[in-house]
Amino acid sequence: MRAHLTHYLRALKDDRRLSDNTLSAYERDLLSFAAFAEENGIREAESVQRQLLARYLQTLKEQGKKPATLSRHIVSLRSFFQYLVMEGVIANNPSLFMIAPKQEKRLPSVLTKEATAALLDSPDTSASSGVRDKAMLELLYATGIRVSELVALNVEHVHLSLGYIQCAGNGTNERIVPFGKMAAEALSHYFPSGRNELLSQRDSGSALFLNHLGTRMTRQGFWKIVKKYAKEAGVEEAITPHTLRHSVAAHMLENGADIRSVQELLGHADLSTTLKYAQLPKQRLKEVYSSAHPRA
Image (cartoon, rainbow, N blue to C red):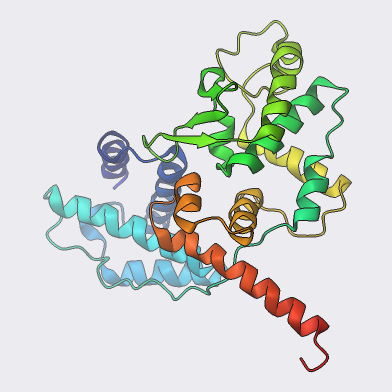
């Protein structure tokens, strides 16, 4: 089975041009299932039956996996076995019976405007690392791009005088994303001082944001930085890798932005993804009403 997995993952990368994060998720899910199958004496894809897949899902549930994680595993397995059918490796797809669990519809977690301002103002810009952190936070909030997109930026992707960046997005879909004066100011300070100091003696290529070693900042490295500043700023809201991205959408819609414009800014393929943020101002209004109205 593992040989087929290798071929399938290569086909995904070459033909569907998925993002690195999506490919990694597929690989993790399928390798997890392959290990489970081998533990149950199944090493060939042709020997996989519905009962084995059912036991695998039950095992994931017993491990406490959330509905979203279970759904992702099901999508990965369905896609893999459909590939095997198309390649003539198996005659029938044993994963067709698998039904994704209903997911709880929760509103995204966002920061208040006050908490956002406190977070963005936390870096100490007297140090080169602080100048970098300020530029990263301001650009992330200004554009709403994903953390993975932020750390993947190169110097040539930033058009400072024109006020926009070229963002690769998921797969190969490039989009032009504008940014405002606060981000422009932070970037203008970072380019001549912070970045040059972080370069040290290393050749980092054209990476925009660098770590203390002078190499490209990683998602994990940046996220440690965000959590540190959130703690220093006294931000009580739960911080996740997408919190600032969620906050951009919610704040813009709350201030009257057109939902189609927010969809284009964030690079959402489906408008329904953006629509969930439109519910946040209404939810906040309900909370204010409940806490303040004497008859609530």
